[in-house]
Image 1 (cartoon, rainbow, N blue to C red):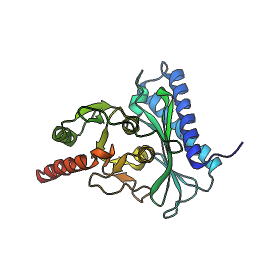
Image 2 (cartoon, rainbow, N blue to C red):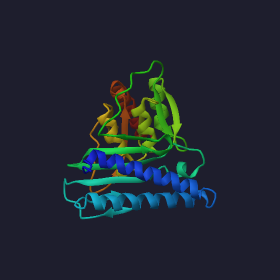
Image 3 (cartoon, rainbow, N blue to C red):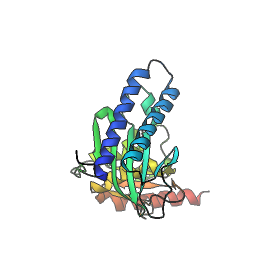
Length: 257
């Protein structure tokens, strides 16, 4: 068997972790509460990914919400950025599918290979064979927002563009929805960590979508501080209108403080 290239490895491991999570949820859902189920799933998927990457790419460090594994990071070097379970709350709720597994590889602060598993849908979206950019839809743009904590500024942006807000779960699920054409954009200004967006941003860019900070500057990964203040992922024709509306909305918010 030929060894996986980085794109193939990301897709294979994301899929394996997703299947592990589905199996665990099926076995444990009637035995433990939601918080415990989420913690167990997060831990099991983390262990699977870190172990497999340690075997398949022993010279590459791994960064996740659980910390660093493997060798020390080198400035501008290769580093895998993973989120073993993006959307722990959604995973722990019966019937929900808006959670994901993220596996990304960054080098020189750019994502160069990644995959996002959507286990309930049985799909893995990856940079090796990225989904083509869906045709533009007619009607009002659709913007994915948090189902529990929709940012106020996104409502302002939506009003400026006459857009519809679509609540859904994890960041990976939201960006995957843009990739698949279910929504047209996802923007966030409440801050996230690199593992929340690295893999889905890599897939989005490979599919021809726009991805940037809300001021239009590039998204950079494998930095000393993994906190990312904001991001925008959208269809390319919506980038300038959304960036303009976002700048206006965030400017008003800052001016009112």
